[in-house]
Length: 273
Picture 1 (cartoon, rainbow, N blue to C red):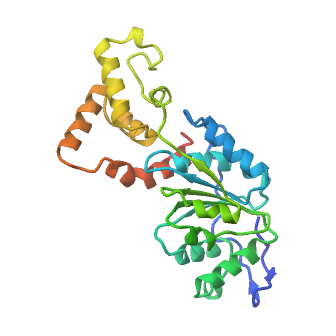
Picture 2 (picture 1 turned 90 degrees about the horizontal axis):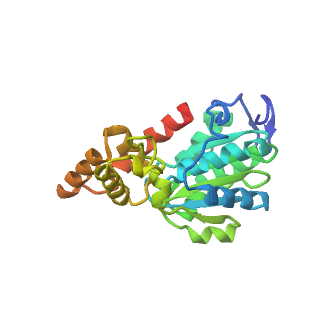
Picture 3 (picture 1 turned 45 degrees about the horizontal axis):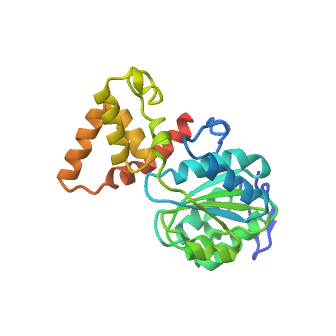
């Protein structure tokens, strides 16, 4: 829980209302035990960095590589360390001001008491969370400046997802974890085959195995692309034909992954899958 109703935060004089939105219920969504194919090393690196006292971790990887899924899985493992829970903060543009406003409102700050200037919002956020350790998942950061405006300080921690390395955040103590394309074996575990798994290719017709291998290569190690194609097309061959058609028409390879990203995260939170 954040500070209770009537608590005065000493930045001016701000009285908190009950939180406008509850923390993310990661345990209820079934994410604490969720498996991430091929991401055991990255998940362990996040947990080690937080256990060692890092104020945050930067998960850097391109669209569709699963940085958000990894951050949420790590948050589910870490949630018990933070009495005020986990907050998911989508960064929908380069300006951190709107995200700060929404976060402050969610934490119980009255609309009329949210400062107009971004630096003042940052100061207020740190004051509100000073006695309420919280884990913030900052999703899709564009710049180090944007992240710095949302660093809570105190006993709180951030998990940042980004397509850019944002290496300068090491100056703020944040640990980097690179999220790259999945190896073929791990990506293959996400694809259903004629007998439920690519680990038994001897039981499948050779053309099916070849189509699956070609499809995985075309997905460039993107778990989201593999899942989307596996859920959309009945066979790897059908998915491969669709990809080749897409490439021949000149559609950007990452367009589907980018457009589906928000709905995929929502579905994952809802279904725990």
